[in-house]
Image (cartoon, rainbow, N blue to C red):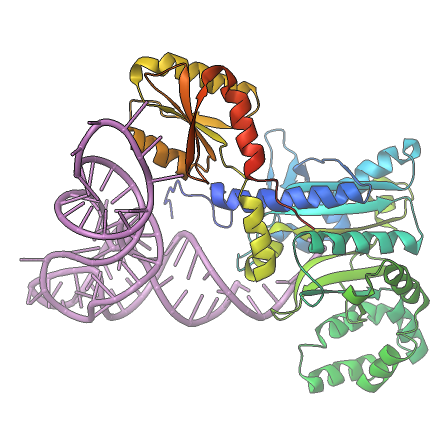
Length: 429
RNA sequence: GUGGCCGUAGUUCAGCGGUAGAGCGCCAGAUUGUGAUUCUGGUUGUCGCGGGUUCGAAUCCCGUCGGUCACCCCA
């Protein structure tokens, strides 16, 4: 058992450039959409008092935390989510902040779980929250943002669906059915599993609670469907032209721990309705954690499931490939054709870099053919060959396979012109 | 927490009781300072680790670690 291993810990992630690129792509789109919706970025601590999570979710949650006692004797835990930190931060300062507070964060979270597809022990979460606004309009804008992120990633109507519900519909139903309020949690468990569970089992469990499948179905089709907050939400989103992305589904329960109103989840339709994001209203949490009343709603999206989603959806993947075409590529490569001219070549490299162009060159004497190969492999569009004819140099367009002789003095401008001619930045939704 | 499958070259894998293999990649060369293709040559292994069975184990058995997928859970 004392197998000392230097491998990365299970479920922790090593981002080699290829996977780092995808991650950065997701981050870039998250940030861009959040910006468009008027959210500003903030950041909370990665390590928190274990009590913060215990307070919010109860003792059971501790088993799923990376937690330990620090050198100062404090019980601490790596954050498994960021909402409690946010609730504390917002509650502490909300009196001096203009409402609504619209904040987002992208950060690593950690959960001690067995890993599987779309789930590791370390993952990045994109969180958007609106605080200090109790109106359903905030829920709607948040859902619009979530849809905006999906679309920005190249996902379309038919690829995913936002299922919305309201945590308040079921207490209302239970009261009417004469079921005691303390059974709410057990009841919601049954509702949550209804879709996957065998009908007889669902029926039996509902029976134990004093209601029935028929009553539930009737409620879902009737009053539940007409539930005013959800109607308003649908109308808001329909006005934005987003109605096609949304479906009311009262089976959405979402943990139930601290949600107080509208809840929603985004599902991947084609791959068996996998949840890629979720959120809702949590008007009590800021009081519980930070001591001040602050209405709030928010949602979170992890990088792993959405990453898989993009990989498995051809049109989303090709959009990523387009983005990749310029990401992490150098722009210019300086070929040293004559070692006697290496000083001039180094000066050229620095000039290009100072002009803002990603530029590389061979560190040691290398055959010209190899240098051109390296330029190609690094993604350079322009190759500037410096040799014995200096100050005459050769500028090659590696895409068009054309070369011209130019003066060294005008080389930076010529390279820039070539790159401008060659390709514009990728266009995303 | 429960269960299935899988660990062999840098990588993808084949080999399934008798001396460790292939494709791809990588490196070098095919007349002078230019990318592709092609051709030639080269390159690498504690067969995850530990134990057991056997004359002999990459191969069979047990354990262990790791990976992966599903269930549970999902804040």
